Amino acid sequence: MIRTASVVSALTLAALLGAPAGGAAQKAPAPKAALRTLEPAPGTVAYGYYWSKATPALHIRSGDVVRLHTLITSTPQRLEAAGVKPADVEKELRDVVANVTDKGPGGHILTGPIYVDGAQPGDVLEVRIQRIDLAIPYAYNGFRPGAGFLPEDFGDESRTTIVPLDRKRMVAIFKPGIEIPLRPFFGSMGVAPPDSMGRVNSAPPSIHAGNLDNKELVAGTTLYIPVWVPGALLEVGDGHAAQGNGEVDITALETSLVGTLKVIVHKDMHLTWPQAETPTHWITMGMDKDLVTATKIAVRQMIECLQQWQHLSREDAYQLTSVAADVDITQLVDGNVGVHVMIPKAIFKK
Image 1 (tube, rainbow, N blue to C red):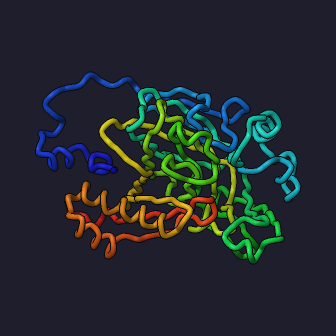
Image 2: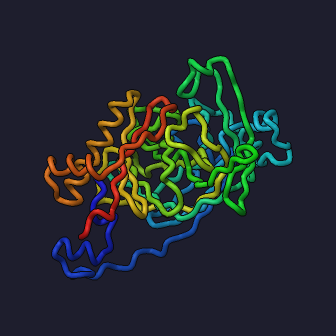
Image 3: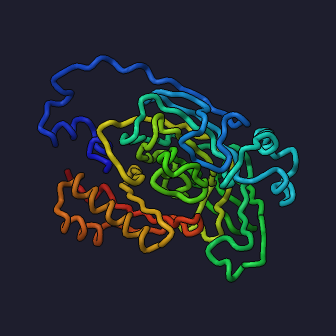
């Protein structure tokens, strides 16, 4: 569970634990964090999978900051057929699509994997999302036969719409007179799953996080992911300029993004499912093929966390979740559906 240490100041934590602020012993200063960069190229992406055997594209230390570029989930051919000028298709996308032969089973182009020195199974990887910038001035939304939440209604239809992005005003021009505020986030941030799961499709989210499609994970928020293999093998992609909860037609405003992430290994935290934190809320998550099961996972995670964070009884935590937390559908279209529970920090006065 996310522990109090991750969400309160050191002084507050010391007071809660009854220890002197700063501690009795002085530790040696940690190595200075480095700023690393990772650009997408045929040798620095995982095309459609999370996998414990994937070759790392970058090695970093806990505490390092990574500035990485992610590519739109599409191909140059599809973008051009939908109306994107050839000159506006990123060269990196052309290179990756043309030269990566080891693709699938999913379709996301994920930048990484990033090997984090010292990360071991049972640890938690904290990913602080410091900044997210648009890499291109357009996005697309599309649906196709057999996909999305309403395949019975749109079963033989296919449509891709290119949506201009106004980076100065941070809005998408969906149609004349319809503007969507931009809240860019990475639809997919995850680590390698347990070795026993093999090479996992990039579409369904699970215990390794992955394709969460959680629109709350914008700049200024933090994702906590359980580590399943040495080095964690963090991958990031599936950039979204904006999305509605549910992502019902199977895509958001799909685009390319540039993100700045601080990555920290925690040895004293233990999770079974991904969790997150915003400046105002704590978030627990659940994923499963069945919506009811996914919801129960997310709600049970919140109850367990409230027991740990706030030392509530199981019964009190259940009641507090009912009266103060919001249970939201994250997405309905990725094989495993997603649910997240958000509880406001402001209700806790100490």
